[in-house]
Image (tube, rainbow, N blue to C red; front, side):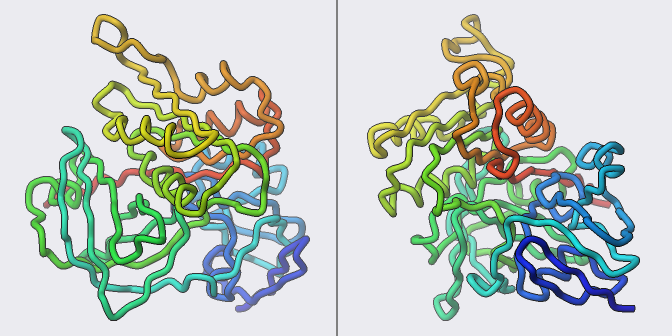
Amino acid sequence: MSHTVKIQPAGLQFSLADDVTILQGALDAGYVLPYGCRDGACGSCKGRVLAGEIDHGKASATALPDDERAAGMALFCCAHAHTDLVIECHQVGSADDFPVKKLPCRVQRLERAADDVMIVEVKLPATETFGFRAGQYIDFLLPGNRRRSFSIANAPQDAQHLELHVRLVPDGQFTRHVFDGMKVKDILRFEGPLGSFYLREDSTRPILLLAGGTGFAPIKGLVEYALKIGLDRPMKLYWGSRDKAGLYMDRLARGWQSELPGFDYVPVVSDQGPADGWDGRTGLVHQAVMQDLPDLSGWQVYACGAPAMIDAARRDFVVQCGLPQDHFFADSFTYAADPAP
């Protein structure tokens, strides 16, 4: 059975089958709603159902607590329609900007940036045009209908190749292959570009970049894009890690301070101190932001990292620092354990 979904306040609408999620139906119709993991875990696709009945699907209680469900909120990436719907979404893009493609690619560089971080650079086919927005991600298409998502760490102006930062996941079959079996010239297949994590260029607000671990990857893409276009908005990067080694491109981030006017970089580690040779900021990275910037009402935030960091930052920045909810953009990393049989 097909239902009609209306998007307010844009006044758009599309048809949606029972077995298709709201997000996928919108994408199929050419409308890009905000989204990240597409797995009900990150909360990036959260929106309000103004009218109609839905099935929340596999939405996690962390990303969509009971009080928000009762208030009409839903995760559009896993919600299905039982009736015609009216939903609220203030950020609707066009899927025609950069069409999603399935393409082969060839591994052209493997560099271990830390004990558990591998930089993977893949070369795109010379005969295909692949466009994307800085900050978006791709899915590697693996045997058994499996997918693994990785953010693009370079600017779209360098679109003959893609740079990806792969963290080794305990019991992760694919990431273990990246570290122990993958070789230069290997062929992979991917789908992309995906996600709605990208720079909103129509704003003049100063930009706060918040990264945790390999959440630095899409942030790197955003900064390199800003350098390419000569962005003149103030930009402040907070990069958090458990230890100094986790700040695997610290020198690069420090160098941006001299290349980009108005750019500032604050590294933060949570599990080291002076006794370990670390003399910088310590603690949780989003709390370091709150110490320095107690009033975020005039800022725009781009956050990328583990779901717990994203959830805490979204909550605390909005409630305690006055950040408008619609100026918090996030890419929440969920790591899949996929043990070999």
